[in-house]
Image (cartoon, rainbow, N blue to C red; front, side):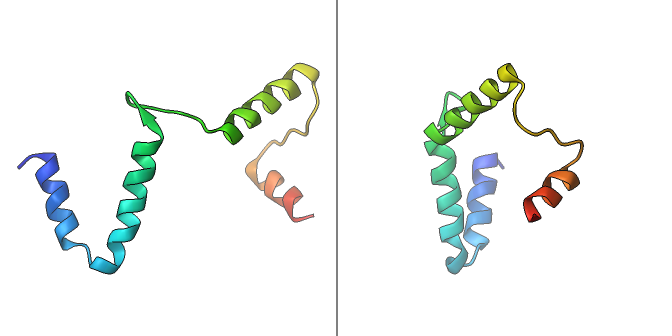
Length: 75
């Protein structure tokens, strides 16, 4: 059985009320893909630019762990 056939079989077993989630995922996946590579949206490109500027200027706050980052977000 091919992977496409397996996917179709799985889809046939998913209840109708959950199909919308699968369709949304697949549409999002296809929308952001070109030749197998994801294309960053405008907001992501702006965040990349901001990060590059912060690195170049030595600005911004650095964290040693995700726990420190999340603790700072709670303040």
